[in-house]
Image 1 (cartoon, rainbow, N blue to C red):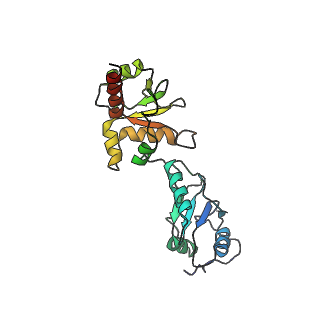
Image 2: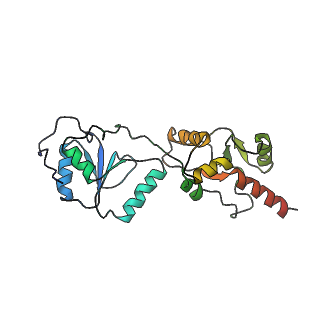
Length: 227
């Protein structure tokens, strides 16, 4: 790594780092202070820690585990700064950066995964009815007829809607969508959930999740318990 193309004077041409925030993680072939100086010369705003407004993260060697975990948590909520390695940084510093530009505004770009489902599931063991008085979005692609599901949920004090808004507490996805998450795939219903969250003002993915299969199993179990 040479890092020698630009001197320390103000750099006038627009670069990928112009008015963009950059965070350095790990160690590099030169000191962090030297790299910070180069980045500042390219118009960057160098940040000392990870945040949801970052544009770039430059990964060196021996990145701390807690920093990697924080980066994964940001991605969980839809914040995904462009990750660069030392080769990328070297290319930019040498002026080869046409494909490294990112928008000035950092959008939320959530992609639902099985991790979202597993970490945000309703816990049916907590109490007899963890969904009571909750506002739930019911995905339209369930195997069970929608009218039947709406009736079953309403009978148990659960408000089911065909849309997501600021009052939505949780989401019921179909068995098919759950399988797609397990397979690392997506579908139209999952895209709708992502879109609604990405376009909202929410700064964190707060919805609890469950599936059509889990709902039906819980209802059947309650019927058996209640005789």
